[in-house]
Amino acid sequence: MQLWTPAHLKTLLPALVVMVIVTVILHLWLRHKPLHIRMIPLQVVAVILLLLEVGKQVSSFLRPDGYDLYHIPLHFCSLMLVALPALAFYRGKHARLVSGVASALAAAVFLLTVIYPDLIYSAWDIENYFQNYFAFHTVTFHNLALFAYMLIPALGLHNPGKGEVRACSAFVAVYCIIAGIASHVLSTNYNNLYRCNIAPLENVRMAVSDAIGYVPTQILYVLVVTCLDVAFVIGAYWFYRLCRRLILGKATIE
Image (tube, rainbow, N blue to C red; front, side, top):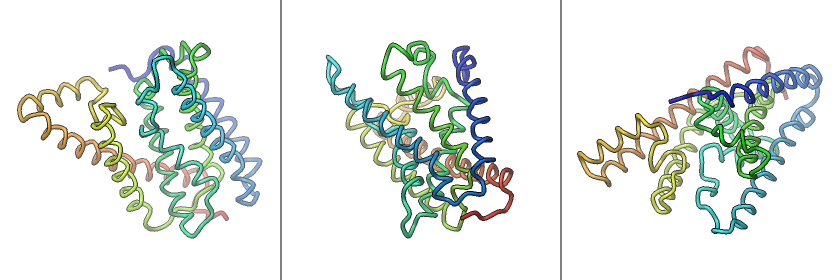
């Protein structure tokens, strides 16, 4: 199990440095501006992510061998397609709560990508970045998601409040139920809810399946993955809160 490949070290690491520099510049430039101005960089990123996804869906439908079910946006990182536009554009009654969930999800994607980038996108995707649209999409999408997360605490785009942990837990649990059902109905591995991409853990799942049967194993497996996802997002939420506090202190910025 290799967390970082040489290809990731050569591309993702420099990209992170550039993102940090740009984020610092934006923080210094926009930190005293009103929220609707500070939100503009995130709105741009959210729109680009949606356009990239449209391109992926069109490209998949145009494939000579037909649409690839794996391209249905039911992966964990695909939640950014909902979360980031919601944070960037929603200004309704529950905006603070929605932004809290979105911030936690963005933090989770950030942590997953910087800890285990080879699980998020492969060295093949990097090497074929300019030759294959799907490789271009996955690398660009996840790098923009990293940048989006940096912007949230740096620009003070969300003020944490009560009820956000419960909202995060409920949202992730509902997502896992939907993605878990879809994974088994379509025999497609969304968010590792059908099988595990981490070889040692997949060996455990298969051993349990041999011992107690496929159906009980899969039910147990989906429940375990759901609990782990919920716990991870809650941890990511507190990681985000820590990042925000380190950057902004206890400030509440409107």
